[in-house]
Length: 258
Figure: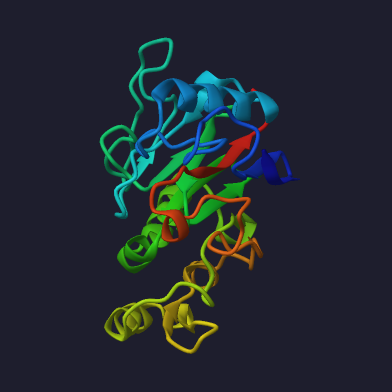
């Protein structure tokens, strides 16, 4: 269920795999994505299972409606939480999780931020000293649009410092497998040269995790943890490229305490 987990100075990071849930094929088993075509009841059950396994209140997890952009929401509650409070947004962030964003930031302890993927790169960030965490969904369009600089900018506006930010990226399709047309590789490489790659069979490719970590370094963030799992190669993870109709795993980040 939880394939990777670590803590750093009171901030908690976790990434799921596809096992331990209740969804039927082709979403078996721990599909956490509500827009993948799975039974909504199974998705709710899976989200509750994963949250409970992590010691989280399932109602205290912020889920985004991801749209492959760069908008960020700064939140202090899940959309439609038990108190009926709407998420609050602060400049330079724009949008709300339910309206469609690809990154979220919070300073509220105990509120977990979640990002869904099935080949894209889940990016988790935390400055435990400032008490700020962020999560971003970085696929090829998001990398090119600048979702990583956008979420870091939003964190800095909440008091984070680049040198203190702990970064982690989870399972994603690797540069040896993410084949793209040469024109697409050239377009992305012009903006993020480190994302340029070649498949193991010699064709043009992109390495989105490498591009994400390059952008983080350019922003003054120390080199973070990068998962070695390729979702296309790992049958323990969902992969849209491999299966098309499939589920979504998630990355979670949150601050401990109240």
